[in-house]
Structures are given as C-alpha cells and as structure tokens.
Image (cartoon, rainbow, N blue to C red; front, side):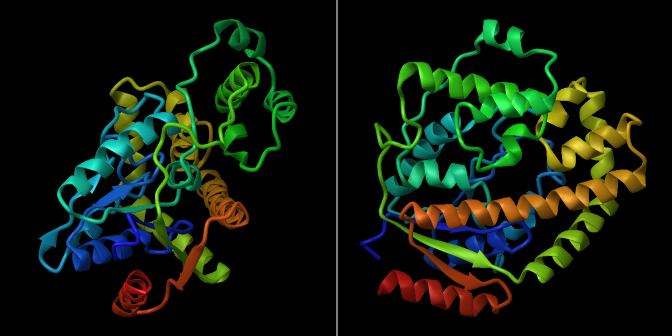
Length: 308
C-alpha cells in the first residue's frame, strides 16, 4: 500500500462508482473525495445524482469531501477544484489515511493526478461583449480556432461557449499550458475504471432517469427557480438542469424534455468514456473492473492491486 498515495475510481455515469468507492473506503478505513463538477452545489441533489445513501456502508457513514460546498448559480471550475482537492487530500493524509477520489468528471480527476497547471482566468468584459449575441454555431467555430474540441460540454450553450473562448484566449495570450505540471503535486495513484456494457449502461441510465423524475427532480428545479436563481444559470449546468429548466419554464413539453434529456445523458456517458480513453493515451494507467461483478469481488480485485 505504501507505493500509492491516492486511489482514483472513475467511469461513465450509472456504473456504480460511488458505491464502489464507499465500500472500498470502508474496507480501508478512509474517506472519499468527490470528483464531480456539479455535486459541489447545494440543494442540487437529484439532478446531480448525489446518491448520498451510498456513503452508508455496513452501518457506518463514510466521510466524503467536495460535495455541497458551493451555492447554485455560482460558476465553480476546475481551478477551484484543484485548490479544494489539495486541502481535502492533505487533511485526509495528515490523519494517516489513503484518500479515494471518485467521480465521472475526467478533467477534474486528470487535473489533480497529473498536476495540471491552471490559473483562475479572470473575466474579459471586452471579449464577452464582442461575442454576445452570436449564435452557438459561430461561437463553436471561434472556439475551434483556439483548440481541438474533445468535449462538446464547452459548446452545450452559448454562455458556456463564451466562457470557454474566454479561457482559451487567456491561455493563448499568456503562453500557459493547461496540461503542464506546475505547482500542483503529482501523485502516484492507483486508477480504477468501472466498465459496463453499452446496452446495459443505456438501460440503467433510462431507469435511473425515470426514478429521479418520480422522486421529484422537476420540483427540485422549480424550487431553485423560486429561490431566484436565473433560468439561464441553471441551463448553464447542462444535462438535467438544462432540460428540466426548459420544461419548467414552458419551453418544452414533458415528452420532449424526457426524450431530449435521455439522449443527452447517453451522449454524455459516451463522451466520458472518450475522455477516459484519452487519459490512457496520455499515459494514465487505468485498471478496468466490470461493473456487474459482485461488490465483494470488485473490492478484492482492487485490494490485490494495492497489495501487489
């Protein structure tokens, strides 16, 4: 175990990552650091799939970090995540434990295990004004002039695309590489990927979407709107919050919302796998375990990797 200073568990949505991380943390008597770009927001529970019940294992609560740390409507980013991750990581290590980071946000995980150097990019009002009102298609083409687009999340909405251009422009002018190591520590992580058959993944995604709608996901979005959070801010978060907000504000019918959201989540899961495969090409060794294996067997396989 002394050879590893971090365990990372990643995989596409609906593979049971959180439950696996919590059971592993129970076995190792440690804690979990979330790597999810939306679970940082308070009161955004069903739409982000927090599944906090997964952190209750064998009658005990598994401590977790970086969930419910930001207010809805704010723009939490990977730079902030790096800073918060280091604090949580050092806190856990100072208590003699081996941290487990778990999530589906590939950039968040890769940014910490590979030590990406990032800066908190300031707002460029002049650039924003020049981009305001341009159609999403044109913004996408502008963003392509700065970089190859590996993840369509940046161009999910015009607001996201403008921010992505703002960040790309900043790095272009300041000559900083987002993928170079800098002042962030590099870890020696054991990276576990949870794999799942594509058709089974699609089936689980659809089943989980129906369940969360039955549990009140639409009401969750309506409450956030009633709090005064602008609809455009919720749409900015994408996926569930984008389509549920469009439904809650009368821009989509229920059937349109469900159909478009289901397709978007399937596409998102595919993009997640594309990112993880890219991580492997960039030198990250991922040990894949099958999602359908019994929990105890998955835990034993991971313990074997740790010990050997």
